[in-house]
Image: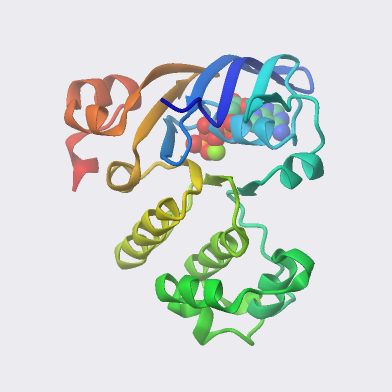
Length: 241
Ligand SMILES: Nc1ncnc2c1ncn2[C@@H]1O[C@H](COP(=O)(O)OP(=O)(O)OP(=O)(O)O)[C@@H](O)[C@H]1O
Ligand SMILES: [Mg+2]
């Protein structure tokens, strides 16, 4: 078996005086899609930000491809091939969709076949290509932020709640986009509240609670075990619709 591409070992993160992560441990297998689940405030976003160097762990290690990246800066981490799509999207609203994409591409050069591939999953971006990104709907902005992370090949993509506020048909497009990304060999670590989405794309899962990982396993295993879902996530049957 391949070694994991990313490993968090006893990661503790403080934000100012607050101790937020209390020894986070999990691994992300290479080439797969790992879900990071947990209730509101569990520490999912803080974990992604710590991996990306936006917070620095006060204790413990973040290991990427066997190298300790705990103390690296965000640009250094990005250069290793890790990209982050934050919850609040990171789209430049004053710029057009095209300009947003150009800025995300290496040397400001867009690979046109890769762009066509993205357009198949996100047709709205093609339609609004020369429009100001601020005019896009919330869901379309979300698509744009994900497209920006997809325009260059990356080794690892960290994505925070991509389906938030999206209509079911658009979520289906996203599911297809993530499946297609997986086929390119990109490893994805995905935070998601929509359990159906998680079930559809996830290979492995880590569940957080109170700043710690409280469960690790396969996504299929968690999807089959409703008692465990209720225990870990407080899901009711309604969330399976
Ligand atoms: N900048 C900050 N300053 C102080 N506390 C923070 C800050 N950011 C997050 N926290 C706290 O850290 C804890 C974990 O927050 P985090 O955003 O990582 O949770 P989350 O699992 O992503 O939740 P959600 O599902 O609501 O997005 C919460 O209690 C939150 O209030
Ligand atoms: Mg969050």
